[in-house]
Amino acid sequence: MDAPQDTFQKQPPSHPHNTEELQEARTLSLGRRPHGEAAEKLVAEVANALRPLVARAGKPTTAAPKRDRDKGQERRIQETGIIIAGLMRSGFRGNWQAVHEGSGRWFWDKGRDLPIGHNAFWKKARAMIELGFLDYVPGKGWKNVWGDWQGEEARIRPSAALLQLAESCGCNRTTAVTDWPLRHPAPVLSDCQPVSIKPFPDAAQQQDTVPKSLTDFMARLSAAVGCHRIAGCAAPVFQMSFTGSLDFGGRIYAKGADNYQNSLHRADREFITIDGEPVAEVDISASFLSIALILSGGTVPDGDLYGLPWVAPSHRAAVKQWFVGTFGIGKPCVRWPKNTPPDIRDSVAASAINKAAIRRYPFLSDLSRLVPAEAIATVPEDYRPKAVGQFLTCVEAQILRHALSLIMDQGGVALPMHDALIVPRSWADRAREAIVQASKERLGQPLRVTVSDASVSPTPNLPK
Image (cartoon, rainbow, N blue to C red; front, top):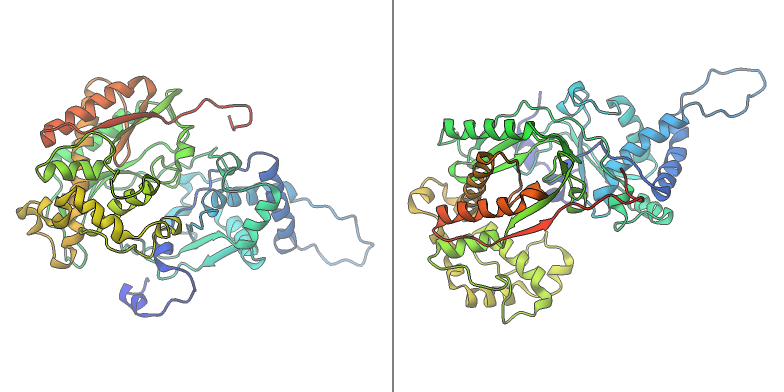
């Protein structure tokens, strides 16, 4: 039986790692494979190092020793390759991956049709830990970023030693997209509720019930996508998620370790096809800032919304990061939080961007006015600053939901992102028009929408 959560909250951590980074770990993918000479060389070296720790011990004998036959070599290399491929794609960024230690947990459900079993995985993973190839934190007592209890979900990532070995073999962050391609996405267990309303933190229960219109929409979306052949990612299983009430959140998430949304990096999404056709991404430009401008009574001006005349253009990435942080905490960001990427944190002071941003967009000085009074009244006092970002998420989600309906009305198909849609390339213009129409109906003004190819044609050096 799992121990109470606050028992672990009061205990000091038993590891030296950043707890927030551990909570943000994504589910380990076992659908990737090594590809190319460099990746295969790395796997072979690690598999050879594992041999003394994982090979079966032979029966003692007084007879003359036989020649050293490595009967399990092929399988050991194959399974080691699966583990390393799942870790290395994000390992160069220092990201953790989550995987259950208990064989009875959902991760190891037979319905997921995994290429390696629980015992084989952990035998090799523990050998890699012993050899110093993996950083490891046991899973007992873990909660995810939502505060949900995760049981025995351990965290693992490539150690500095493994990353150094990878570099010596020719594998690095730049080559990762081709070194470790997704070849066999694991099926997603479809036992999740189509619409979820999580209570506000410390709230006893949610305040809203799920309306039939939302469950009907999710059923329609799932049926529409299910009629098409999606390749390059796991077959989508969707869940719409709100926080506290129907006024906050509402994004549609794709579930599973190999989903197209947050388990694949942008470079991986280049290989997604729908019915064999390359895809395009249709994005709302500066989504939260554009929506906030209109809700504050303004309009979306021409030009780059993240361009601040008093901040050098070379700091655009930092400006964009500043807006993400500001909408997330519900007030202007005057100093960079600890989890800000070092290249951004060291490039320009958050206070300098803060001054310039408010000068161009005065409404930023009081973001609470963006949330209707009747909606903010339902939010616990200590959660109200975060409610700003969640309300903007709700408006964005309403627009994309309406756009999805318009596309399905025309017989089309689209995969929802957070501020974008992935569609067959031939549907890109119609998807853009759908988002423009949906935003105009929700906000009274159209949002700016851009189209970019998210697919490239495979070349001989890429996996087929």
